[in-house]
Amino acid sequence: MTLQDHHGRRFNYLRLSVTDVCNFSCNYCLPDGYQCSDSTPPLSVDEIRRVVTAFARQGTRKIRITGGEPSVRRDLPEIIRTVAAVPGIDDIALTTNGWKLPTFLPGWIDAGLTRLNVSIDSLDPRQFKAITGHDRLQDLLDGLAMAHERGFDDIKVNAVLMRGHNADQLPHFLNWIRTTPVSLRFIELMQTSDNQEFFEENHISGDSIKAQLLDSGWQAALRKSTDGPAQEFWHPDYAGRIGLIMPYSKDFCSSCNRLRVSANGQLHLCLFGDKGYDFRHLLGRDEQITDVIAFLQDSLNEKKATHALHDGDTGVRTHFAGIGG
Image 1 (tube, rainbow, N blue to C red):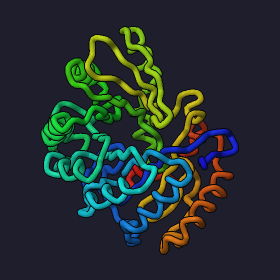
Image 2: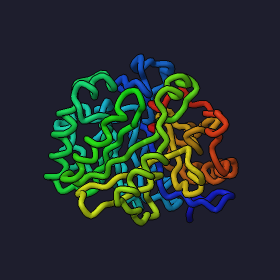
Image 3: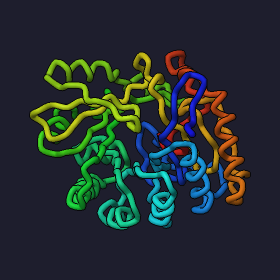
Image 4: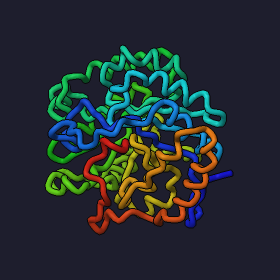
């Protein structure tokens, strides 16, 4: 069985948020810090197990645990261990801001984590602090070194390039991955309902970066079926790779292979959709997993062919902390 929509797209990748809380205050996401707007507790470990089981029975093989910041949950190792034990799941990734990464990472790896994504928006400590609100860059770099030592060979680093903040860092990032074997993901700044002015002042087209890469000898890499939305490039002179996530590019949505579940148990068919589909009431008992599967299949009938970002329609999304980007 495979989850498939009316546009022929198959979904084998779930982005699962386990909290909407974030302890960073990145200027492009939560410039005023986390503001609690919903007292609903996040999904429990048992509820998470039932969500993942339902998706796995429909062909999902990759789970990305997101937030907010997942590490604010003290039971994150238990969550990872629970997801890893679900039959059919063979790829467990985590996206984190890297808070206390050297402290937490060994426990995550021992629990079954297979992939790691860390956000690093600047390699300059002062600029990193200006963007995120925290002086934690060295923690992240130490954590990446530890991941390499533990045998991780597919580490991704996310960076949002912004005209007025870190656009001048591109050469520094490129120099870094000459000897650092990570996949560096440049993410286009995306418009939300509350950042229009910031977006207009700071948005950089991913197409312009792509042109620079191709002119410098970078080559497009082959995609795997469980890959995310990035267009990835490699160069024989570099230990690392570069990925570009460009939601404003032509046909960005045609290769969509992922669905999202928020920390409060809502299915989101698109990051920029106009609503979430609540199914937490179906997560109380294992016997209801078949009902969850039916719900997923029915909901996919409403998935649209593409987002409407080009028309300035950002859906219900005010920021990405509650759904993991």
